[in-house]
Image 1 (cartoon, rainbow, N blue to C red):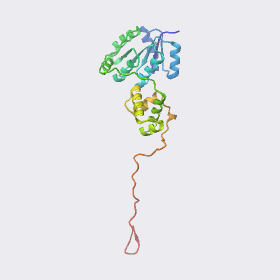
Image 2 (image 1 turned 135 degrees about the horizontal axis):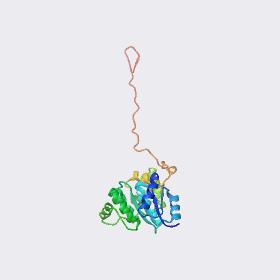
Image 3 (image 1 turned 90 degrees about the horizontal axis):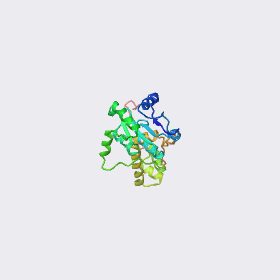
Image 4 (image 1 turned 180 degrees about the vertical axis):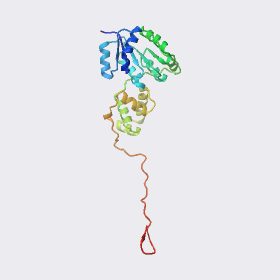
Length: 246
């Protein structure tokens, strides 16, 4: 039957607790799942929930990107993000930017958390004050995460393989400027600050599989190159007794 509430969370041991607590707060027909990717999308299509609650730590720093993907695929579903515990406000604001109508956290106080959760169940938009403040600090409203393109996936794979910028540009037959534009868009979409965080995000989101990693560019060289050491020669001489001295 269409309708109801779908909760996406990895806290499998607490699923029954979530169901009871949310139903007591007024959420209808609660279903809790830890499914990912296609299995999750099939479940959403099957249930057609009116409200979707996404645990902020479901994919850790990548969860706001997942929110954007879900919102593009299911634009009529009301979606909110919920944080049980601390979650960086600069990441949390991207739930709202990427399409969530509400974001709340237990860090704002447990009693207040459940009161506001009930308001979300009645369709009210509720956003943590800290997140509102972080968005207000920006001179321009941040750009929502876009869909990762095939070319950007190729860039991500090469970064994960340790390719340098010149090697990536050469492999993809693009200029360094175009490559840097792709990298900027990728870092913004996935909310990462450097290549190390990007590698973690790419594996978490399964943009790159481990069997795709190949660390051998055609011009692969070790850098820095080892210093050339002159061969050590033993000093030889002839002792007074005619024997070789070392």
